Image 1 (tube, helix red, strand yellow):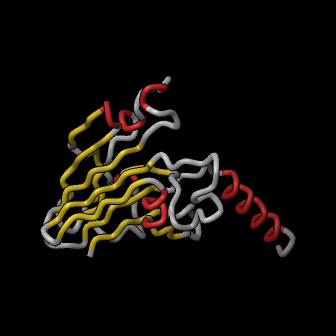
Image 2 (cartoon, rainbow, N blue to C red):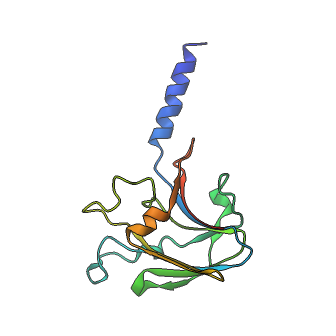
Image 3 (tube, rainbow, N blue to C red):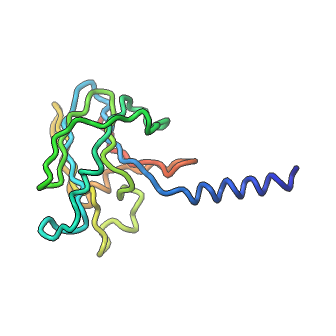
Length: 165
């Protein structure tokens, strides 16, 4: 029996390593009031040189009616009603109290220190604005990545979070 156990563990490790990376980006509203969220997820080309459609068209935000994203299941997230401005690759949405919005995946976040600010790398998620009764937080460029706190997963690739408390 002991000879099958190492083989089983090796197969499990290989399967986990072979899984495609999928790290969601959450804006989590712990507050008792709704907040306005505006974000841009641009292609690698400047607007005048775009050869593909704005990526927000394919990456519509999803809502998760909870702030505990540790046990997040994609089947529990639903497409979000939002305002879309293709000319700016920008989405605006109202995030309800005690809920989370998934605004992207596989983006640079705080754990990507080897890439942040490095020549030749640009974040796609490069603008985030959150408006609430308490004020406005506006981030652009690499400041977005620096403020998205990366949480590593044990059996997943983890996630990136911008939490409003």
